Length: 353
Length: 225
Image 1: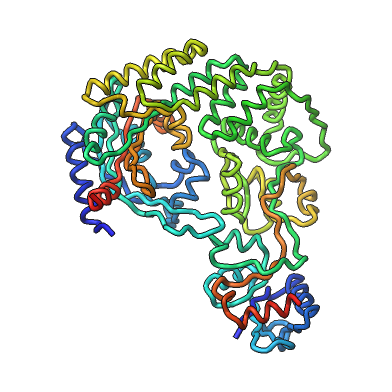
Image 2: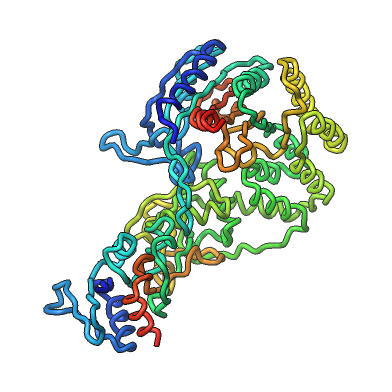
């Protein structure tokens, strides 16, 4: 067991480095109103966050992450551009399946993070390079991805807007995405919508149902997506290689899928900027599906740093979340990128060294 | 001593008494109908503990009773990592009920879970909040929907009269236990054409630690004979 004091000391060291990079330290509340978090993450957050009740304020959550409160605070009264850093506990519960896990994960641990609200095109590379420099002594593996690349690939499919929107909506849910893609790739099955004698019940309006039925009828008339497209998506989603090789493969894929060409160019520029910071790009993995199973709010560049020792959680993770600032900004938006490091895991690695 | 937890009232209690009687163990409530004390005849060292069916999982896991009769639904909902704490000794063949997801019958465009997922997405876009599912089986329903990657919904707690929540517009769908589906039909609800979230029935459970006791093993062997 590493004493908490030692983990704090590692966290303070990281925080000082973020401050030196020009970030202002912020300290969001430990107890957050549950509403915004539930709306953003959906019901799944209840399986991960501790929910408690306040007799006056209603449902509250013990801070499950910093990004949401930091973005909320910035969107309410922050000036642009801005960069923030923080150090504090987050709380995550582990909802188990049929069997109690042999090793319980930490349900309370430190996060030290940096969030950049900036329109500067080099922000992704700056955050990644700073994390890379701070984590260099620990011999971690760096993995990156880009959700914008996958979304552009889907946007470029020769399908109706309705099908495109459904696929984009489920891009973070691989199983459901694949079911939709399979369905769109096969001839549509005709379907009846028999009249029902039951009275109308509930808040969903009859007009809403009729709109969906009209959409389903239009969908049934749509020709199947040629199999070469799902094959291209499959190859794109499966791409995982050291970054320079991955970029070469992406350039080839862009020949077949012109819609991804701008994203590939963006990835190349970012990689060059990362290389310009003295980082060897061949030591960075690019995994096209990297951001797909993480938090839904990442919609661009994503990264994580992983320890080679098995059984440890990711040491650091982060990415771009432009859409989140739009959702929480009530009409305002600003590009944002950030990430967190877990000082506790670093302290463990230091103790084992 | 073996403490046997049995539901304290209703058909579940009667059928449990019958099940044990068929195996030569006579359980009964002592004294008046209002007294929650019980008697065991035909088995040495067994005490009857009458409890609410919903509390039996917790008592088993805590080791305050060695054996207990309750529904699989309650064990799986109330005990996280249930199989680490209790063992299913035998299904008892009564108290059958399925945990299902039901939507208004008037939704002629919604038959499968894929339909439901798509309706949830539209509903959220149209109403600005997530479609509400009323239930008291929060963990089971959440885990099932997560496994099927349905995301645009929220659970609202309903501890009773759940079938009425749709008409009252406090929920758009419900997840509840049903045996015949009659209450659902009476409330103009229909079950999605999917495998149930869980098929439940009355089951004899034993605490994991209790299973190691020779006394418990001997009693269970007798019941199985």
